[in-house]
Length: 100
Image (cartoon, rainbow, N blue to C red; front, side):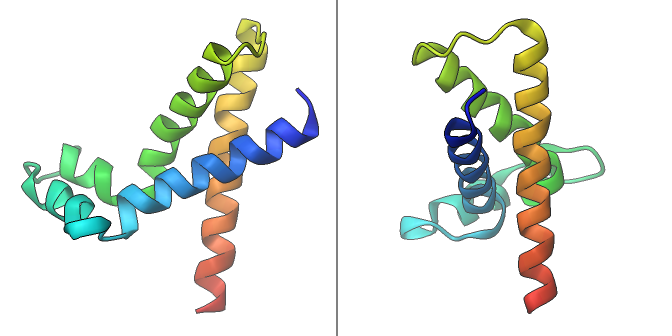
């Protein structure tokens, strides 16, 4: 994968993950979505509040968008991109948490 697409995919995954798990969103739509989900261990609410959990789903979505956009990824490249995008998201998140 080209470095430019790797950086864009990583940033897109971070943005999507942070938007869903941490931000209120316009008209508090994401906050209301998180609150409306049933709670408990392993629940949808926990998944939508945890950037570690949600980044795996967001990175899969980013890989799917890249693939639909014409990027030819074989199975191994898809899995590596999926996990790498999520990993970069978590590294950025931890770096931002250390600053606060």
